Image (cartoon, rainbow over all chains, first blue to last red; front, side):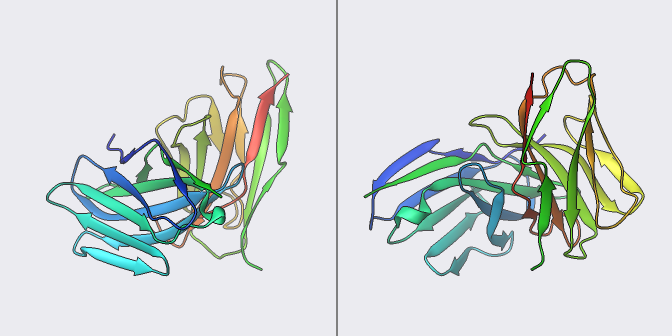
Length: 111
Length: 112
């Protein structure tokens, strides 16, 4: 089944720097979502971008979607220690009634 | 506060035993989901339910069973047929299918 695939698998940056994570997928989608998971906890929904949207902002988060390349990116600006978590993209394929999660990017913010 | 409650947080299973994981939501959501997460991996869908008294198999349903007798509740039974049940189990809900999901804090199941 279709799956979003995040890149890189792991990322370590200094506090205050920007973090960029990418997600690629295989087939046409209705929308794409990004989630955050802190260690040992459930996922938290961050942002949803529809297939007819190119960019979306929420606080320090910026998501872009390029349907021609079947890819999305999540940018976290001015990173903080609290941003340390795993980030997952989830895609909703056209004609499918469920979303598929990728394997995630583990982000570590260094003090 | 509205949310999803999973219990217990930790669960141990003996060989040959069935165990049931609880998931309750007070968000008035129609759709509910069960996922399995293995270390360093993404989420794999076990079962999902669009509405009360209806559920469908996900990608890895073998060895698991569910029921949806009430809108608020979607318990998952890990049967003895599931040969590798050690994992982190996450329950989620959404207003309708494919809408953003709200997650519980998971149940970690281990084998004694």
